[in-house]
Image (cartoon, rainbow, N blue to C red):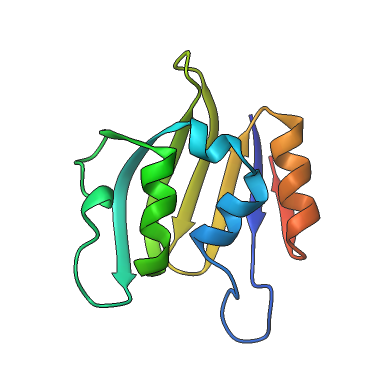
Amino acid sequence: MSHLIIGCQRERGLGFDLAEVLDALGPRVARSAWAIEGLKYVSRDETDIPVLHGGDGARVLGTELLSSLPNLLQVIDGEFRAFKADGELWVILRAVDSSWWEVVSDDSAVLSAIRDQFLNVDEQP
């Protein structure tokens, strides 16, 4: 699998979060099942976002994940794994210490979409 690192997009802070990464991936985000693990985040109203707390490894619908985004202020750490309807993994997104995001996929369309959307993208071995 190819491994991309998305770094800061502006002088202070990342300048993006989960919503922008998901937006870059397009409509199949909503059609996927997402497993969320190790999540640490800040919500806009300082309360838990229920859809994000299904337990490590539990899957949520992409539509539910997308509906949680308006109340999500910042992901600090966590991994989001997306699965097609047939159960095949198609992308892994990782937030790392509010410092960068990692995107892991074999899908060239995913990798191109990330490179097209973000300025500071490095490929890792």
